Amino acid sequence: MSIIDVFITALVALRSNFLRTLLTMLGIIIGIASVVSVVGLGQGTRAKVLADINEMGTNTIEVMPGEGFGDKRAGAIRTLSIADVQALGQLGYVDSVTPSVMVNTGLRYRHLDLSASVTGVGEQFFRVRGYKLAEGSTFDAAAVRAQAQDAVIDANACKRLFPHGQPALGQVVLLGNVPVRIVGVTARKSSAFGNDNSLNVWIPYTTAMNRINGNDQVGGITVRVGDGVSNGAAEQGVRAVLLQRHGAADFFLFNSDSIRRTVEKTTGAITLLISAIAFISLLVGGIGVMNIMLVSVTERTSEIGVRMAVGARQADILRQFLIEAVLVCLIGGSLGVVLAAAGSVVFNQLSDSGGFRMLVSVPAIIGAFAVSSLIGVVFGFVPARNAARLDPVEALARP
Image 1 (cartoon, one colour):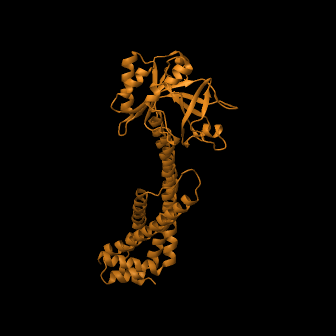
Image 2 (cartoon, one colour):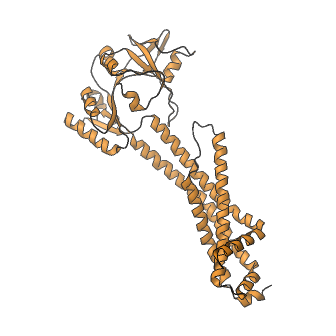
Image 3 (spheres, one colour):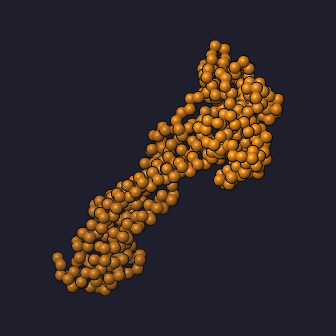
């Protein structure tokens, strides 16, 4: 028998026992749909969390004084300087760089007296951190050199200062006793770590140093690494430059890429764990295929005897029952993929979770078909072998 003849015979046999075939497929359908859906949920979770991390500022390296977080001596270390910022900005693998100068002052506007985070930054800060503007513009290098009394506020500060939707651009607010003019408002950013309700105001670092703080202390430096550059290699380069300039390790680095790697490992491990649990249903479905095929061999003993009596070889019988098992699993796998895809469409339409989606990927679908075929071969082999080993005389003698 040719392969085509075997396929036709297998399809006829499956169709003649439609209900049994459907019940056999049920375990495969549920198993494949579960695995594809779980992988899609895992990929959607990973994509959402990584997108939130990207909004916090991608590929950044923080330079801070001291030996690490919580170092009590960090406040007394004043070696970070604007010259360090300029030196780091000249490195070929650095996309942009900004200093940060903390300002200990309040935010006042008319009758409002608010507690806000006021930071002096460079003109590249908003690119480094990945901020987008909702309205207005940021201050430029000329404004930094001129110690301009300009400010950019975030969406939270804008909402508190102008709760009734009044125009924010051009309004003058007080930072301590220093008036500054609002030139821009940043768009709201979602966070992977919950909603950030703090109020943020950014002004040129020269303004913070000379008009408010009265000193040239730089609290930290943030470096954005260029696209396509290894964060690890960039971190080593930044460390080498600062060690050469300072002569000692009076600073420490924090690479934001470590957050990304941790999230990827965590979400990958969780997805693998849940997929392993869902794979159990595939195993159960495979055992169901084997049991039904064994019953089918018993029921079709006479048919097998007739085939062998008219010249069918053991290889033909083995191939026929094996292809029947594989077809059952492939058709069940296809229906499982369709069920998972339909479920993802419904889930994505009904989901109201801030951009979280179920992503059914092509590799997951290919893997589902591969697993379906493997189950058919593995669990269909024993029944097919039993059928092929039947003695034709005894098979014909059975009722």
